[in-house]
Image 1 (cartoon, rainbow, N blue to C red):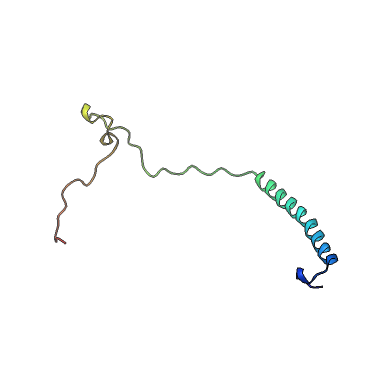
Image 2: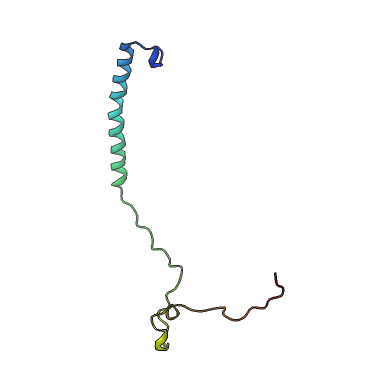
Length: 88
């Protein structure tokens, strides 16, 4: 028996099609059952992730003109001049 469809007669083609369509619903049913069982398993909750930065809050004692600005919520560092040894 050849598995090339163009060499099969109608009877062999019909048997092959019935076999494939008989297996396909079973395969779909097994796949759906597997997904349903996998979704019903008890899952352990993920531990809370550590925040990358510590919230220092709003900077106290700022002049009124700097309130509600980025400067009120940030901490500045390395703002001094840096020595330059060469140019270019």
